[in-house]
Length: 132
Image (cartoon, rainbow, N blue to C red; front, side, top):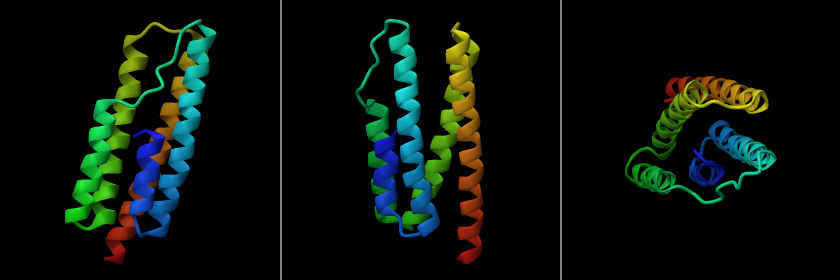
């Protein structure tokens, strides 16, 4: 999920741990985008600054799902799914593209951090399940 998605989701949840996770990840992903844009510029490229249609649809789906179900649980499930997808996307890029060592190191670090973030999110999921 992009930073905007995490911020919007963070505003929609009531659980404090989940809200904190959302806002921290919004900042983290914003940093990731900046890092990747800097790498693209270093190679004389032009970064894409727009949002994707799929990202916009995912945010709309989270809003819809949280409005008809338990909001925190629905948002949590979608964030887990999104984090898993992000790891898959990083794996594809790392496996398929030929890139400089600097870019590979940035991507590997970002993927590792997303995997750690996913572990944190699953711990929140367990905590919320116990509380219910």
